[in-house]
Image (cartoon, rainbow, N blue to C red; front, side, top):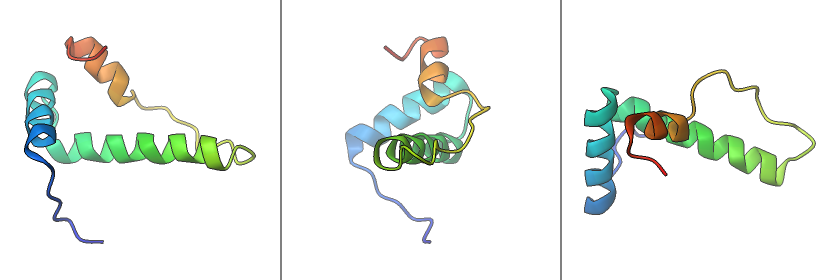
Length: 70
């Protein structure tokens, strides 16, 4: 899978703010977003699988702790 992604400017700016506020790299943030999205899709589309157990902090939790989340 290619590692080159282009995001709209607004999304890129939001990602920059989160990266600065949390001290996490953009790669880590993107990976967590994709993992969270895949987990949500699994629960929506494959409810019998239950999805993979999650032990890490979610991106929502990181955003709340940084003061940037809702």
